[in-house]
Every structure is written in structure tokens, then in C-alpha cells.
Length: 84
Image 1 (spheres, rainbow, N blue to C red):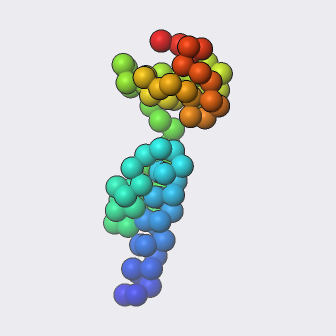
Image 2 (cartoon, one colour):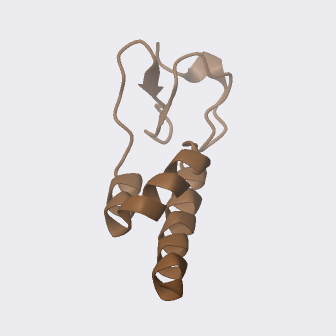
């Protein structure tokens, strides 16, 4: 039983770390990883989808960023260079 809890905690921690590095909710992904295990890691690694009106792609690095971002969080491009 202790091994099972340890393995679940490891999957939860791994999912939280991946989610945090991708600017997602780390606590939510920890809980998901704890209960679902390796499947949450697969979903956490998937690329972010564009949401119409909420996100856009940076023309410099092509990463998905928030629509009203001042700077691209990946490459640091200023907002006036970003596509609408």
C-alpha cells in the first residue's frame, strides 16, 4: 500500500512539474496525476491549443500566448510586434 501511494505521489509531482513549466495549474495537475497516473503525464505534455479571442501565436517563436500579453513569455518579444 505504501508503494502505491509513493508511485501515485511521483506521478502527481511529475504532472505538476510539467504543468507548471507550461504555465498551467500545477495543483490541479498534481491531483490529476495522483489519481490518474501516467495518463495525466501524456495529457500534460500535449501542446496548448489556440482559443479564439483568448490566445494567439507569437510571430517570433510561434508559441501560444495570452491575447493581452505585454511580452511573449517564451522569447520576450514586445507586444507591439505580436500579431492581433
